[in-house]
Image (cartoon, rainbow, N blue to C red; front, side):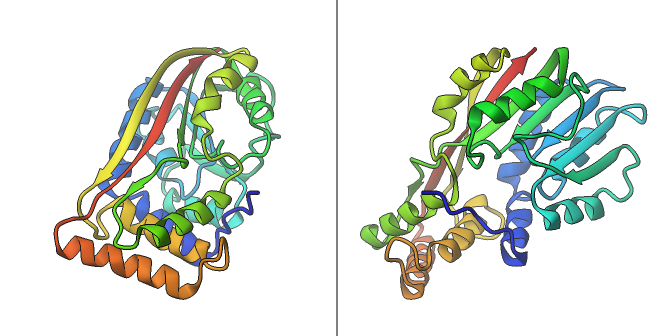
Length: 260
């Protein structure tokens, strides 16, 4: 059963750092390209997090366009507001992906990255996505398949227990497999699906998996029999693999392009 990831200051910092790694900067570029942005568009970012994607979008829609970011976490909303303080065409507010505080057909484009694995009702969330997107509008959805991360380890049993515990952080660990059906049920047209793998063969603070490992190690403690000592040993094992040049990490995210 999903227990949810708590966005305390430590987790929020690690996420912000992870989202600034070249791995995720590149992925954001693919999202921007898929949105096919133009001057004057009104864009909604569902689950806007620290505001990095919204800030990037604002630079592609001109001063007559606008971006609205919505997120459940107060500290994420505040962090995003600080990041985009100088962007006159970006605003943020707190809101629920399953009950968006906007009128029907309000946006030319809607984007949601790393959100739907966390919502308890995927169909309700996709209905809301479709509801606020105007007819003819374009949307992009990106989510991770958390069921199959590939991570080298010194102690495979310890790693497996930690990764199994981590799966409790989301409501649906394999949401990409359900997205096509949910998109169709929401009366959206699926135009493209693309895999966005993240692969690291080095373990340092310039790589996504470095920050992800810190978040996972902390979350896993006291879940699935994982102790603080287990988490420390797992991270130490990763460090030892890095020193020997044997580190490997890979996980798949999936990008879905839709129209209404």
